[in-house]
Length: 372
Image (cartoon, rainbow, N blue to C red; front, side, top):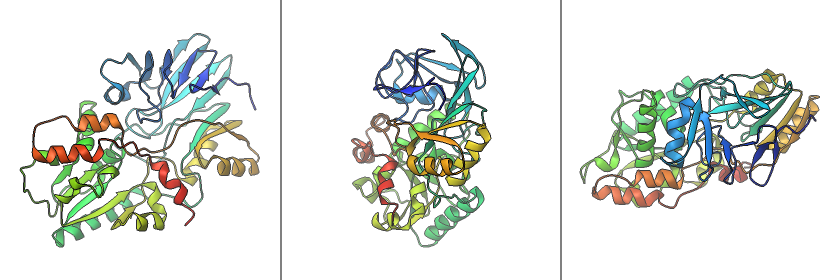
C-alpha cells in the first residue's frame, strides 16, 4: 500500500501534509466535508470547507453561525503542502469526492456516491488517482438497482392504485437527498403532493440552492380534518406508525430504500410496498467506479467492506479496509427534526414534531437483516 497521505485518527480521516480532516467525527480546527449527511458533517469544528453547491444544505445541518467556506467543483486550492479539489459524487446536492495531491501522489476520498443519474445534484465524475477511498454501504452482489424509468413506473403505479381505492400514499424516504430525488421523478399529474415538515424544510433549501422541485404542501399547514385520499405524502421513515400518520387514514405505506431489495425487511416492517432505491452505489457500480479511477490502491470504509476487499483482491487489486465511523444512508437527524418543528401553531404541527423529535436512526440499521 502507498504512503499514508490520509489516515484514520480518533477524530477522523486526517491529512498531515495539509493539516486538515475529511468528514471528522469530532470537532477539529479545519474540516473538509464531502456532503451534509449527519455521519459526514458534524457540528463543532472551527472551520468548514465544502463544495459551493452544498453550502446551503451544510449550513442548514450544522447551523447558521458555522464558519463555512465553499469552493467550485474542480477548482484547486492549496492547503499547506497539498493541492485539494472537490469533484461531484452524485450522492446528494453538493456531495463531493475530495482529491488530495502531495508531491505527485494523488488520493481521492469518495465520501458517499452513486453513478445513477439524479436531476437534483451534479452527476458523479470519476477522478484518476493512485489511492481511492471508497464506501461499500451496499457492497454485496445481491444489491443491483433497477433503472430509474422502471423505478418510477412502479412508484406511479402504486400511487394510482391507491388513488383508485380511495387511499393516501405514504412514501417513506430519507429527508435529505432521497426525498427530493423521488419528487423529481414521480408523475405529478396523478394527484397533490404533501410533505412532512422534515422533508419540506429541506425542499426549501434545495429550492433556494437553485434545484427546481414540484409543488408540495406541508401537511401540517392543512386545515384540521382535511382528507388526503389520492394524495402522495413524503415523510421520513421515523414518522411511520406514529400518531402523525393517523390523519392520513386510509393509507398505504411504502419505503424507498436500498434495503428494500431484501423482501424480509419490508415484511417485518409491515409495509405495503418497498421500492429498492438508494443514493449509494449498488454492487456493479462500486466495481465500475473502482475501475474508472485507475487506482493502484483501494481502501474500503463503511458497509460490507470485508466482502468488497476480498473480491477486489481476488481480481488482483491491492485492496484493504479503513476503519471509520461513517454509517451509510441516514434516516433523519435531530437538527432536521428541530427545523421541522418550526412554524405556526396548527394542531397537526405538534403531532408532526413529536414523531421525529428524538429520531437519529440510520439506514445501516437494516444491514443486519440482509441474510434473509
